[in-house]
Length: 150
Image 1 (cartoon, rainbow, N blue to C red):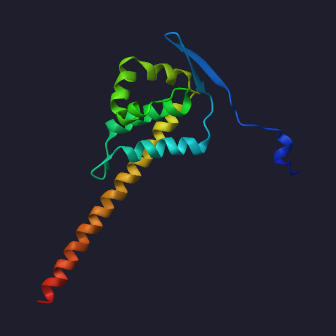
Image 2 (image 1 turned 180 degrees about the horizontal axis):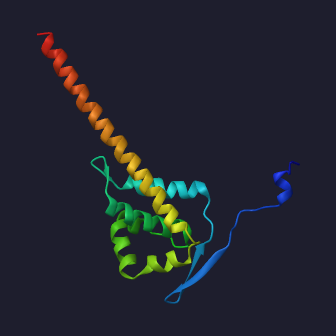
Image 3 (image 1 turned 45 degrees about the vertical axis):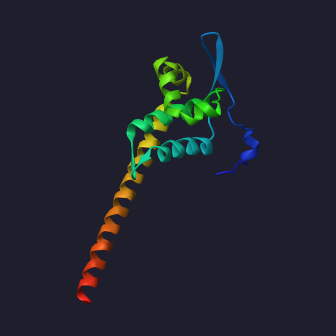
């Protein structure tokens, strides 16, 4: 089989956008988001949703939607809106804004992001449960050793 140099393919990253109107404002929706940005989006949403060592799925859903808007569109949030992300989420959700953006994303992209976030959530929750279990076992062993030395 003859090898072909990657450069000969003359490929470039897809930078297409779809435009959608929201009221009288044109919103641009990227048709490709680089993998580093996808990873950042998913990690930020999952890690931001951790409460007492467990991922809160309601928060995860909210943060994923907000970060999708932030990464896939030309929408930016003010510092005040970022301080109250859940309030910002409620405003966007109650106005069906997320539905509009999701409809313009590439086919399967929304599902992929949520699927990867769910996997990370499960892995993080399992990891945290294991850490708690190990810590509990360590305390038990230390208590037994301390009891034997008396």
